Image 1 (cartoon, helix red, strand yellow):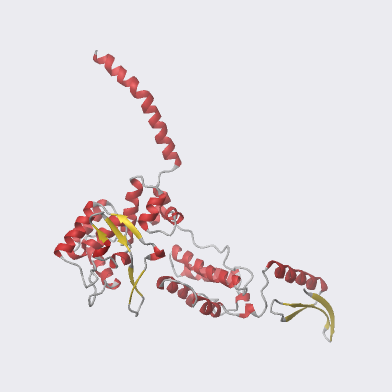
Image 2 (cartoon, rainbow, N blue to C red):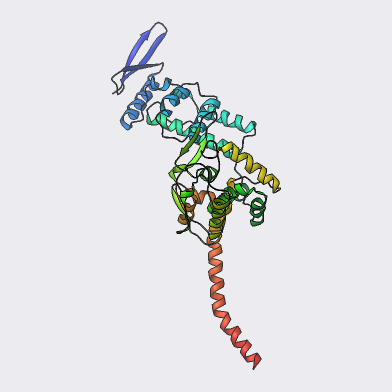
Amino acid sequence: MASIDRRSLKSGVTWRVRWRDESGKQNAKHFPRKLDAQRFKTSVESDMLTGKYVSPAAGLVTFRGFYDRWSKHQLWESGTREGFDLVVKQAGFSDMPLAKIKRSHVEVWVKAMDSKNFAPQTIKNRLGWAGTIFRAAIADQHLAIDPSAGVRTPRLAPKAERMTIPTADEVSKLLGASPDWFKPMIALGAFAGLRIGEVNGLQGSDVDFLRRTIKVNRQVQRRSNLPLEVRAPKYQSFRTISAPEGLLSILSQHMGEIGLYGDDGWFMPGRDGGPAWPRSVDYHWTRTREAAGLTTKFHSLRHFYASGLIAAGCDVVTVQHAMGHKSASVTLNVYSHLWETSEDTTRAAAQGLMDAVLSPGEDSLRTQTNS
């Protein structure tokens, strides 16, 4: 454990705290007052007993230096890695030693993003990624506390205001404005809730017309200046979707009149027999929505699909599986405002009781009047 001894120097008396860390290395720190030395000794001993101890040398590693080593071992998709990389590239404290990063440094970074008119959700996401790195540093005993904890971000608008759900008429306009070969892209987003990368990755063998199902087995993505990546769906969300007859009809017509592309049978054509390139799909989506006179984002078609399931009375778990969400809590976090509240359910139940009680009396009154 730690010890205190009195040191007499030319500059005066100091109190030295000495201790050995878990590796056996001896450390020392000097204080002008014995009281301060005793407090520090108690703190070091407590941290070592509870596993919160961080050696002075470990805290000298910079935020960027720790991230460079730690990130190599993370099982991330390319999009996730790009998000973390961007945080380290832009954060003003990236080249500071971890032990010297304070909450105020993180607050300055958040304020800078807000001053540049970053969207509140973007700021929240980047702060969350920074917090993940800080917590990893804590787990590796490079840091004692997370300096991003409790840092406030700009207020988000209510979910109902942030989410744009196209109307049935708008989806109809999109289908009407789409070239025939591109119609499956819109239909699979609006009537099956597929992400754009999942539509890019759909093959003819994934559609079972007999069982009326569509399997989501892969997605196609591309990082800047790198080849296409065909990989598992986001969050490993392999799923089988119950497809409506109308959607199967669109897909069947596409296969019969347009045909599938390449030896693997892609619905969306790409290059040299491969899947569609995301940038090409985005270009044709933009042209289609502009032809329809709309500014709808493709992801809003997923919201259209989810809102339809919820309006039809599907429960949270059913919607979660259909959307390919990692957990039911994610589904609730995104769509909770679309479900009826307990007040709505109570009101409807009470009205049902009233209808059951009053209807017989009304029928009896009508019978007497007619007689």
